[in-house]
Image (cartoon, rainbow, N blue to C red; front, side, top):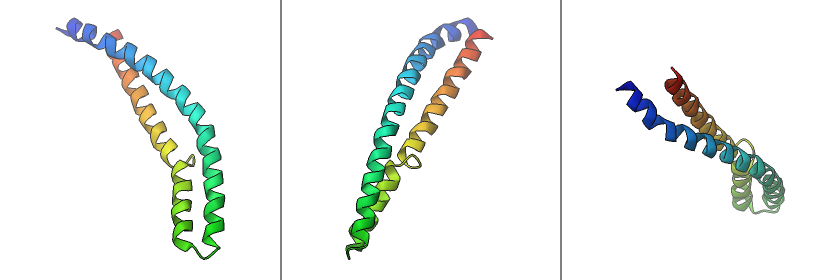
Length: 96
C-alpha cells in the first residue's frame, strides 16, 4: 500500500520541482520591477502628501508599501518557501 502512495506522489514532486524553480526565477525578476515601482510611487506619494492632497498621498504611500520588498513580494516569498517545504517533505516520503 505504501509503494502505491509513493508512486502517486512522484508526479507531484516533479511538478513542484519545476514549478518551484520557475516561481523563484519569476520572483527574482519581479523583485527589481517592484523595487523601482515602489520607489517611484513613494516619491509621488510624498509629493502629493505635501501638496494638500493628503488622501491621495496616503493611498500612494500604501501602494508603495504593498509593492515594496516588505509587502506583496514578502507574501509571495513565504508561499514559495511553503511549496519548497512541501516538495522536500514529499521527496523524504518517497525515499524513506
